Picture 1 (cartoon, rainbow, N blue to C red):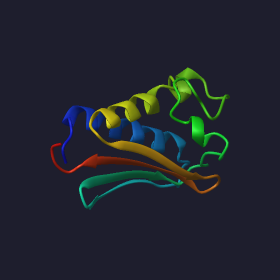
Picture 2: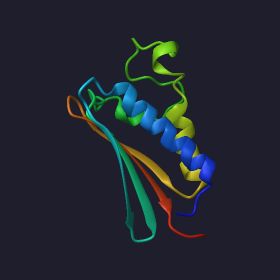
Picture 3: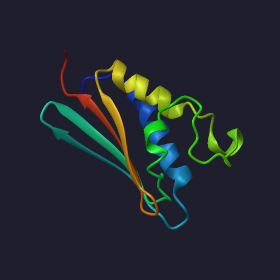
Picture 4: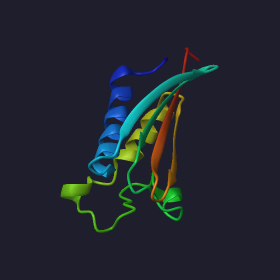
Amino acid sequence: MWADEERAVQILTNLVGNALRHTPAGGRAQVTAGINGTHVILTVTDTGAGISPEHLPRIFDRFYRADPARSRTDGGSGVGLTIARGLAEAMRGTLSVHSVPGQGTAVTLTLPVGPP
């Protein structure tokens, strides 16, 4: 994979932390990896409550929280996904999210296999 190792770890740390925070006891969070042509695809999935469709377009917005009841102490600052997406794009990659309420969330990081 063609990426800044520290920044890739920073992205994955954020994604795994979010998945663990939103997965209830007895649930599951996992990371999968694969190659699709010219890109490495890393997906973090969880079996949490999921994200409602009306929140998905704003999930990468700075300071946005889908659950307004979560405070900064138990829900983070609201900038982790914004930073993660910016880092992915700086490495010529993408960060996307797919979620189904009641079933969980999958966040996918796609990074190039080789140099530009």
